[in-house]
Each structure stands twice: as structure tokens, then as C-alpha cells.
Length: 127
Image (cartoon, rainbow, N blue to C red; front, side):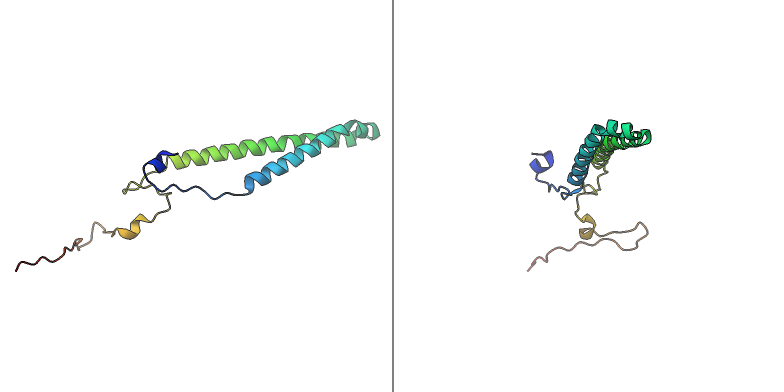
């Protein structure tokens, strides 16, 4: 349990997205294709040298891009989490990312305003 939940604050998580599963699936398929291309490189070299070179380049590209995408995604996730952790708090003590509209309940008074905030109290019977 997080400390926010223990303090009784609302805890909101981000909606689940399909993006990590899609990237993981594409990465796995790419590694599988690279394995097949590595397996047939020598046959293509025997046929024509440029075919072999082409298959080597394609194989390495198919092996490398999943690692690059994983590194970029992990760095982006870490950066996003760090930015949210350091988000400034509003004067109400709530952060700007909690999804609540704290300004709706509080009047905004500019420094040049001629009006004073008024408060009302229940009438008391003096009789």
C-alpha cells in the first residue's frame, strides 16, 4: 500500500495502454526474423556476396532495434516518473496532477480588487 492510500488520499493510476505489449510483441517477432536471417546468411553468401551482406545487415538491424526501443521506453518511463514525483504542490497541498479541480470551490480575488470576501453566518435570535 502506498503512503497516499494510508493517509486517506485518493490514489489514481494511469489507464492501461496496449503500447508496451505491442512493442514487446513486435520486438519478439523481429528477433525471430533475425534468427532466421542469420541462419541463411551463408547460403546467400554462396549464391552472391551482396545477398549475404544484405542478409547480415538486415539480421543485425532486426536484432538491434528491439534493444534500442526498450532502452528509449525505459528511459522515458523513468523520466516521466521522476517528473511526476517532483511536481509542485498547489497552495491547497494537492498536486497539479491529482485530477481534482480545487479552484472551483475557492474564489479568485485579484490584488487590485475593490471587493472584500464576505462570509455569512446564521442569524441568531436575540429576543
